[in-house]
Image (tube, rainbow, N blue to C red; front, side, top):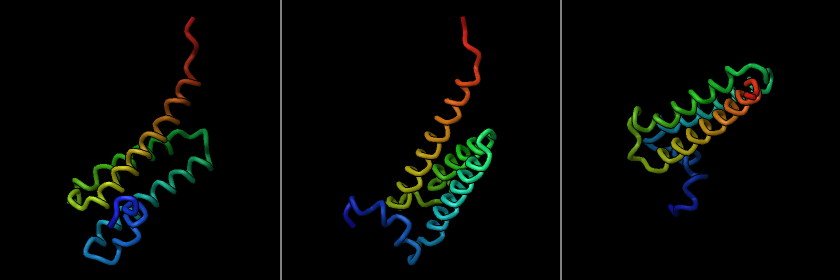
Length: 106
C-alpha cells in the first residue's frame, strides 16, 4: 500500500482481516466523537461536551498502546491523528471560551 493511500484505507479495509477488533476501536471512537459534537451543537453553552471530546481524543490516542496495536502502523497512525485532532480542536474551543469569560485586567 502506498503511503498516500494509507489514510482512506485505515479503517475501511481493515475490518475484513485479523485486525477487525482494532478497527472497531476506530469505529467506536469516531462514533463517540460524533455524538459529543452533536451534544455540543444541541447545547453550545454546556462546556462538558468539549471536555468529553478531549477525553475521548486522549483515549483514542492511547488506544494503540493500551490495546496492543501500535505495531500496526496504519491503524495506529489513524488513531494517533484522530486523537490529536480531537484534543487540539476541542481544547482550542475550551481555551477560547475561557478567555471570553475571564474579566479584563486593568
